[in-house]
Length: 108
Image: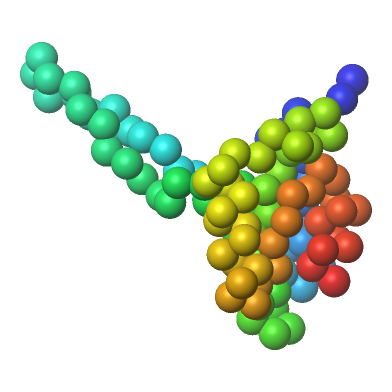
């Protein structure tokens, strides 16, 4: 049975944290707030922020990894691609990964 995106993400986080990085999940989206009969939404996080963000300990480079299953690898949204491109432009490490091996290759 193929792994789900969240399972791949958790494996990558655990592995990279043992291999000289400090990474975590960064969520973004909207939170519904109910006040009496009114409902509104509050935006949290940056739109398109990668699933995993963090720092490579040896040199302090920022890491941004967008995690996808192999079948969904090409389903990166405009905002996700834009975020990854900004990180790369600033000298960080960024990319789309589908496995621990791909993440390791990117951050080594």
